[in-house]
Image 1 (cartoon, rainbow, N blue to C red):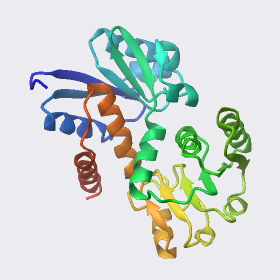
Image 2 (cartoon, rainbow, N blue to C red):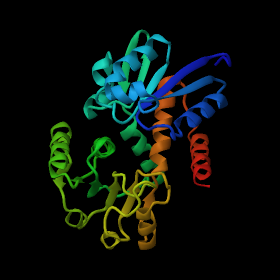
Image 3 (spheres, one colour):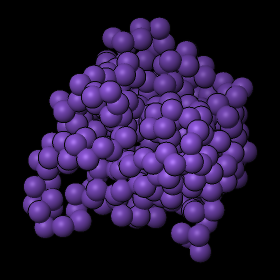
Length: 292
């Protein structure tokens, strides 16, 4: 690979100024002899895009395409709105109805989704022998939906989708049942009931983030035989993970999903295989520096 190869990529979303993605992607590219610039395109950055909001998305995607971007990462609130602007979708993006990575190549704009595959990469790397007999997913939003698809593809025997919005949980469960059929999939608003006999818990809500501290459910519901997987990574050691470790649960921190997403995006943008250990080490240095 020529050291003169240059790539321009970016991230479109709202309130993304603190994203670690540019540093992760640029450092991995440099380690592989590429010159990559990662541009944040924040809908909240200036008065024009703040006023237009998501309505600015077609203009931004068209501009990136015409300016020779290799691709874009897409985040809140644009993951569904970007779909009509694309030429085609990967099977995973089509199944999830959401896109978090766009690749511009050979005149085509193709949408992908690395949320679910990124979570799965981190989960299987950390707990390769995890019991998937009864998995409880707490949170049926965008991240939870992507993870739910991956859990079904991992052939979980039973999946319970729990959300305070019962209609949202039921809609996701019904969609999963239509697509996958195999696992027993149900919806609930009662975490305590869902966790009875559960082999593992996946937490996919914002609770526990620096901005929204706390535990998403009573620690008394956790049992040593369960594993607990988190998606929050600011901080890496959330209150939920602390409680789970104290009980004796095996845990997966949210950083593994962030690294898995980055690996997938890098490979889609560049066509090169990323060094997982190197990206993971860099990510954890960045998180530690942010909190210091």
